[in-house]
Amino acid sequence: MAGSLNRFFKPDPVLKAVSETKENREAVDVEPHPSTSTTTVGEHSLGIESDTNTEEESSPKSSSSSSSEDENAKSTLADLFDPADWPEMLTSSLKETIVLKGPAKPKEHFAFPKDASKRRFTSTHYRRRLGNGEVHVRKWLSYSPRLDKIFCFCCKLFTTTKMSLTTGGYNDWKNLSQCLATHEVSPSHLTAMGNWTELLTRLGSGSTIDHSYQGLLATDTQHWQNVLQQLVAIVQYLGKQCLAFRGSSDTLYSENNGNYLKLVEMMATFDSVMQSHLKKIQNSEIHQHYLRKDIQNELIGLISKEIRRRILRLLKDAKYYSIILDCTPDITLVEQMTMVFSFVSVKQGDSPTANPEIHIEERFLGFLPVHNSSGEGLTEAILNELEMLKIPLSDMRGQGYDNGSNMKGKHSGVQKRIMDLNSRAFYVPCSAHSLNLVVNDAAMCCRDASTFFGILQKIYVFLSGSTNRWDVLKKHVSKLTVKPLSDTRWSSRIDAIRPFRFHVGEVYDTLIEIGGDMNFAALARIEASSLAKELNKFKFLCLIILWFNILSRINSVSKVLQSQSIYLPDVVELLE
Image 1 (cartoon, rainbow, N blue to C red):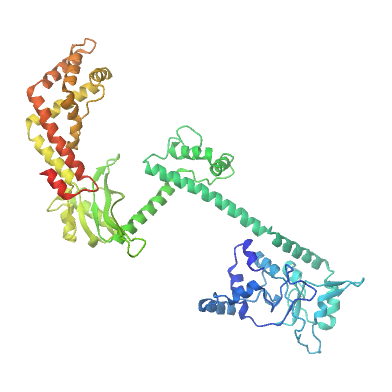
Image 2 (image 1 turned 90 degrees about the horizontal axis):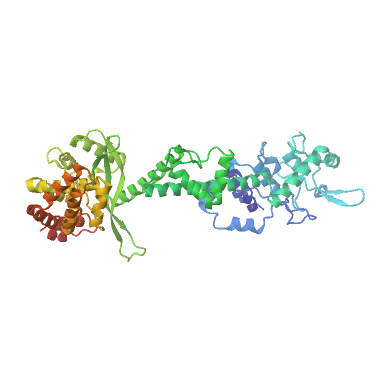
């Protein structure tokens, strides 16, 4: 019966300790009353353990560690199954445990001690003979071997009336029969008997208040777990897709209330848990619904914290790392520096003979706002962040930045300052960026090249500045459009040159048609004619072919340099 109590409420640590020390108690030679069944719920016999308890006491759990715990508990905890040792204040969980155990009754051959008057308690008092000759068992009568006194089991549990049978015990054996006869018909005893029987019945059917409360609590806990799991999934989805959370409204089922609430509404359409949750919100049954903007931010923060924790664990397991940094201004014009760590992750195989899995990881840990973009300011920001993350600077083996003077400067740049602190943190400039700078400087030092790309940009701006002019271009070149020049990636300018390389005639016809069409404004016609003349020059046509061939090769090399599976000899061969 002790094990069955776990179905109704969380185990009390006091009861657990008492149960574990039961085998160390003073031995008492008692047995159940012969007229009662050993399977009766609520009856407990000291000195006779069930098979379950015997197995528990003889199991390997009785180790040295548990024995020491038993000894500690033995010195501090009372025997709850002896009514003389019950605490003065009984909690509901203790009462339920005691009721499940039932009153202890000595064995028939137990030698009850005699008092000074040579009188003693006998087992015959456990029976009451009625007027019609029937014998009624006094199940409520409980004997304390330690005090040699009797108690009323149910009254001690369920009544506040002060009497010897409930407080210190009764041992006036001369007047015992009269005392028992008077007590068992008293109103307080009958009420206590009713409470005892009711609780015993409810425990047997699993319908106690504590059990019902635990059931409601478990149901409510499961509900909130399901809700939070779905909300976390929504946060993860929006984060992965780089989508905004909030809109102009924070109200459910309103227009433009943001992606977060719209996804919640959509999930409620198909999921009963979320549907029930939203109904409770609309009916004002709950006020803490985890949909407010501060909870959204808290969920984002918790997920972010966990992601950072896992990345840092991988990084620290790898020990050695490199940093890759770049800066860009945000919408408030505050310079934001990226923190990217590169390291080698080694995952051991399932078996000792299996080859380990090796992965080169590049993990982004966040943006770092910087207000001093000099080499000194950036270095200080990096060192402070490494110290906060508890990442040793001595384990850094590489630095990867762009070619800005504050980054790559050999006298006061970031790479030089960090190299002074850790000579093994070698600086490796971005190869793709270096190639882009070489092409940019080579082109800008040539006047014809600058003029050539300027004309290309003017043609794009002219044609894309009007839908009517763009329609004329589509009439001549249906599957290809003119694209703008890239100011940062010269290798990508191949996309702007390609239409002219293979469709220069169609673009020329477009400009001639616009220049001769009176439906267009005079300024548009003049500009179209001027651009057509530039396009028709021999030098311009030669530059189209020249720069297309140059940028085609540079674009191929640039893409290889940015590949995750880059092979250095192949890149060197392409560059040569």
